[in-house]
Length: 352
Ligand code: NAD
Image (cartoon, rainbow, N blue to C red; front, side):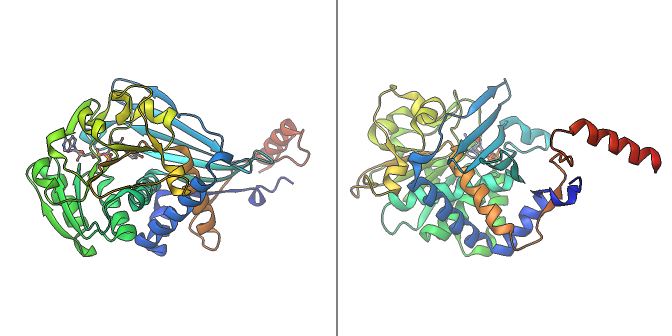
């Protein structure tokens, strides 16, 4: 049937994504998204897994992140260009597709810039539920750009974090972050150094953007019992923590073959022990073991988290009209008559 209105693919624009997030409620969205990620991490072995395919350039990286559970297939296109903000562009933009493995047909096309910020934050908070010291209330956030407020909101929603200590080399970024979070009940301090920011914090989130081996935290800054949520180092040659911190910490990762290329642990020997988060989330191994332990979530972002986010959006838009109907699938009356469909289209247009 050449009635393409019946063969449309739902498309969630940036505008519709924002409407969806506000409709669901930011905190509920983050909690439910973390539940979807948790569900998929618990069935980790069923997924096709591969380190993401990265195309590097002097200014940044463009990456493709595919995975499948045998029934659904998902991928995300995402970039990381730290210099972009200077010309009014985002450091990270993304879009993604969910498809039916049985037919290979796409089922959803969606913006994933906002969704990536939400899923990264949900993943960080989910990891911290297993790794942060019990009763943690105070978090330092170093790097107060696009991801930062989402991190704060996820830690509030999932862990009850209600005190924030902000630092950014650009003080205006911290002021904006504090203003954006003003209505959410946080006690917020803007700090003048990373050292000041981590004072009294049980959780330290590093989420800076710089294409170099930066040292956002040095070894002497990190005391016993802290959980470090290291989000910004996610590319070869782009790290945030001094190597000596890693040597004292227990390190938790998403997918080791990808994290060894992209994460903080690129600074360590290829056989340095790490714990896979899916095993912690599944209850197969422990998260935090004692009060004095330093834990690091060496976050780089893995395809299964995006797959979970795509599934979540597919389910949430079902009973709404928060999407457009995209004419993406050619569908001739007779499947092999693709050429004929073109001829019929030409005839229709010449008659009009
Ligand atoms: P952004 O450019 O919007 O913000 C980055 C902020 O870091 C800026 O405000 C900048 O001034 C600050 N900064 C840079 N160097 C700093 C330093 N030495 N000390 C303190 N602040 C510093 O970027 P974003 O979208 O917020 O992303 C932040 C980082 O997180 C990027 O590196 C991005 O690639 C990474 N990221 C990781 C994941 C993941 O899953 N792990 C997901 C999304 C983004």
